[in-house]
Length: 109
Image (spheres, rainbow, N blue to C red):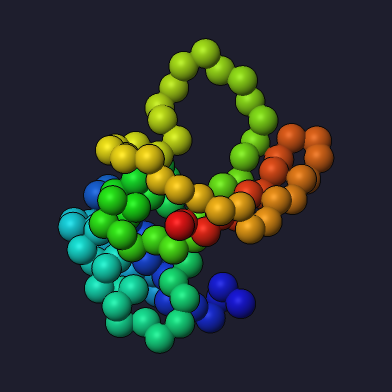
Protein backbone atom coordinates (compact mmCIF):
# COMPACT_ATOMS: atom_id res chain seq x y z
CA UNK A 1 0.00 0.00 0.00
CA UNK A 2 2.73 2.49 0.93
CA UNK A 3 4.70 1.88 -2.27
CA UNK A 4 2.02 3.60 -4.39
CA UNK A 5 1.63 6.71 -2.20
CA UNK A 6 3.49 9.99 -2.74
CA UNK A 7 6.29 10.40 -0.21
CA UNK A 8 7.81 13.49 1.39
CA UNK A 9 10.70 13.84 3.84
CA UNK A 10 11.20 16.83 6.13
CA UNK A 11 14.94 17.49 6.31
CA UNK A 12 17.28 20.43 6.17
CA UNK A 13 20.28 18.30 5.25
CA UNK A 14 19.14 15.23 3.29
CA UNK A 15 20.21 15.33 -0.35
CA UNK A 16 17.50 15.07 -2.99
CA UNK A 17 16.74 11.38 -3.48
CA UNK A 18 16.39 9.69 -6.86
CA UNK A 19 13.41 7.55 -5.85
CA UNK A 20 10.60 10.08 -6.28
CA UNK A 21 10.62 11.19 -2.65
CA UNK A 22 10.23 14.96 -2.30
CA UNK A 23 12.22 16.76 0.40
CA UNK A 24 10.55 19.50 2.45
CA UNK A 25 13.35 21.80 3.59
CA UNK A 26 11.53 24.84 5.02
CA UNK A 27 8.17 25.76 6.53
CA UNK A 28 7.31 22.13 7.25
CA UNK A 29 4.04 22.89 9.08
CA UNK A 30 2.82 25.13 6.24
CA UNK A 31 3.78 22.58 3.57
CA UNK A 32 2.16 19.70 5.49
CA UNK A 33 -0.99 21.84 5.82
CA UNK A 34 -0.99 22.30 2.05
CA UNK A 35 -0.56 18.54 1.50
CA UNK A 36 -3.40 17.72 3.90
CA UNK A 37 -5.65 20.31 2.25
CA UNK A 38 -4.90 19.06 -1.27
CA UNK A 39 -5.37 15.33 -0.62
CA UNK A 40 -8.72 13.61 -1.03
CA UNK A 41 -7.61 10.71 1.15
CA UNK A 42 -5.80 10.26 4.45
CA UNK A 43 -2.24 11.52 4.78
CA UNK A 44 0.14 9.30 6.77
CA UNK A 45 3.05 11.04 8.49
CA UNK A 46 6.01 9.31 10.06
CA UNK A 47 7.54 12.01 12.22
CA UNK A 48 9.59 12.72 15.30
CA UNK A 49 8.41 14.47 18.44
CA UNK A 50 9.37 18.00 17.46
CA UNK A 51 7.46 17.96 14.16
CA UNK A 52 4.49 16.13 15.69
CA UNK A 53 4.32 18.77 18.45
CA UNK A 54 4.34 21.53 15.82
CA UNK A 55 1.61 19.77 13.81
CA UNK A 56 -0.51 19.24 16.93
CA UNK A 57 -0.31 22.94 17.82
CA UNK A 58 -1.34 23.77 14.24
CA UNK A 59 -4.38 21.47 14.49
CA UNK A 60 -3.27 19.28 11.58
CA UNK A 61 -3.46 15.86 13.24
CA UNK A 62 -6.56 13.80 13.92
CA UNK A 63 -4.88 10.57 15.05
CA UNK A 64 -1.51 9.54 16.45
CA UNK A 65 0.16 6.13 16.50
CA UNK A 66 2.95 5.68 19.02
CA UNK A 67 5.26 2.72 18.60
CA UNK A 68 6.88 2.31 22.00
CA UNK A 69 10.03 0.29 22.59
CA UNK A 70 10.75 -0.41 26.23
CA UNK A 71 13.95 1.32 27.30
CA UNK A 72 14.53 2.96 30.68
CA UNK A 73 16.65 6.09 30.78
CA UNK A 74 17.16 8.78 33.38
CA UNK A 75 16.70 11.81 31.15
CA UNK A 76 15.96 12.80 27.60
CA UNK A 77 13.83 14.89 25.29
CA UNK A 78 10.07 15.11 25.78
CA UNK A 79 8.03 12.77 23.59
CA UNK A 80 6.15 15.62 21.93
CA UNK A 81 8.07 18.87 22.09
CA UNK A 82 6.60 22.32 22.44
CA UNK A 83 3.05 21.49 23.49
CA UNK A 84 1.73 24.36 25.56
CA UNK A 85 -1.60 22.77 26.54
CA UNK A 86 -2.84 19.36 27.58
CA UNK A 87 -3.92 17.25 24.61
CA UNK A 88 -6.86 14.90 25.15
CA UNK A 89 -6.46 11.50 23.50
CA UNK A 90 -8.83 8.55 23.08
CA UNK A 91 -7.16 5.14 22.85
CA UNK A 92 -8.48 3.31 19.78
CA UNK A 93 -6.16 0.32 19.69
CA UNK A 94 -3.29 -1.18 21.64
CA UNK A 95 -1.23 -4.13 20.50
CA UNK A 96 1.75 -5.69 22.23
CA UNK A 97 4.63 -7.13 20.22
CA UNK A 98 6.69 -8.99 22.80
CA UNK A 99 9.20 -8.79 24.15
CA UNK A 100 9.61 -4.99 24.07
CA UNK A 101 7.32 -3.13 21.65
CA UNK A 102 3.77 -1.76 21.91
CA UNK A 103 1.61 -0.11 19.21
CA UNK A 104 -0.76 2.57 20.59
CA UNK A 105 -3.31 4.20 18.28
CA UNK A 106 -5.03 7.35 19.56
CA UNK A 107 -7.64 9.78 18.22
CA UNK A 108 -7.34 13.40 19.26
CA UNK A 109 -10.42 14.70 21.07
